[in-house]
Image (tube, rainbow, N blue to C red; front, side, top):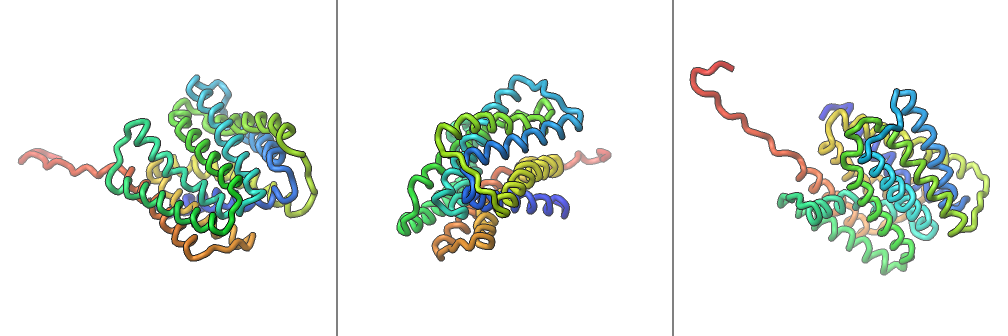
Length: 301
């Protein structure tokens, strides 16, 4: 993996992880579902415009349409919607840690539902992930964390796992940026319906809201997606997915730096265990290097 790919992967992980902190800031001054619906409307329209400039169209394959709808509902409306609501009551660092278990859940689902083989390293990574999350949740429960917020985050990461599994093959027909833009618009439509039914819509104009909203819309919403696509094209899905192991570390670090959230020793140990588990699972997916067979004597290379 070259230097540029490493830089892209680090930037993607940092931006993706920082979204929890910016979301926490947004819900201080605006109702969560309504603000998220507006964000997806803007990001989706920008994504579709970029896709059209790139020469892409919305004539997607049936598989792409199915994946786009599922992804728009499960990731944007359910996963992010539930996380935005939850962060009215729990810290951004905890939400980031729970969300960071997604690669572990994807690997577990692939093993249990699709019969994907797991190496001993992969199984050890799954076990470490469960142990790390249990350690973190144990300390938070003892500290009196809001259970409703935790439950919403757990349901959200399960929805994200479903969305990730549904996206398999969604880019095989091309038009990837169009898929990204359309799934954001689908999520926006669902949230615009859900917001007035489930919350009192309010917006308190502040500079921090404006800054956090602009950052969330442009950086995690669009730039992180672009970096992810470029990284996939440069190093492939298996190597690119390795950068997910940085998400719990970056998520906790950004929340601590910008929001002053504190972590105890057991929290830090749990984060490191989860990080190691994610790394182990991702490394176990790398294909084994093939040893070239020796050429017969006298054969020319």
